[in-house]
Image 1 (tube, helix red, strand yellow):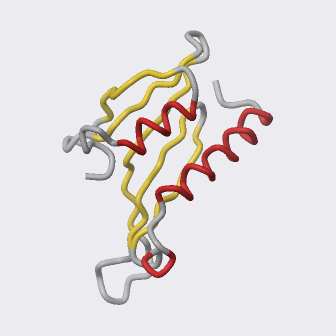
Image 2 (tube, one colour):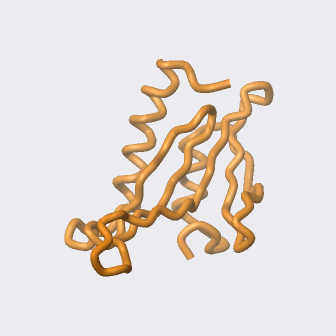
Length: 113
């Protein structure tokens, strides 16, 4: 089930606060930046890179983290993208901010390399 409008609005504020803490300096953002997409009950953080082919204007987005809210269990599941391009569970937390802190620490270098 997708987020309600009030949930999406509340999460959007928390997401923007988190994204601002991990974004590179403004001078670098043309080459690399981080964005967030909300789809159904999941939040996906992606890296957005400048095109590598000359003449191309399309930025390259690579999924890094997926956080899915499991309403029946009242918890967030954090996933990381394996080299096989499949999501694998990384951790479960009670709040979105706890999840963001785990992603920010990136203890096992699963999210940012």
